[in-house]
Image (cartoon, rainbow, N blue to C red; front, top):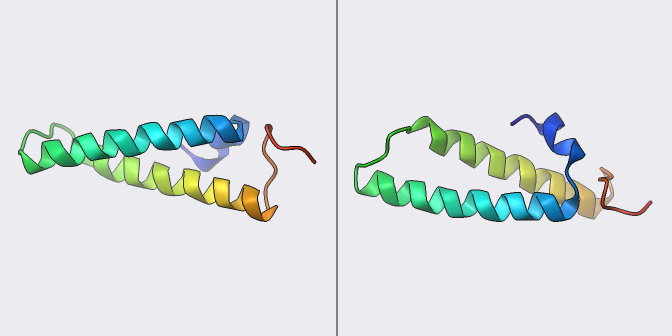
Length: 72
């Protein structure tokens, strides 16, 4: 996903998405260790998506960006 696509998410939705992505990343790393990974590029995509979500959440904390679930 692109960063602009995360604009429509609320803070709670972003946190849930982050949790899901971290769980999926752990599963993919386990599959990689067992050499059962079918899509190695998914690791890269997931890592970047996690970084984008963390960046957006941090910007919300600092007040740089305003999300839908945040009061003005």
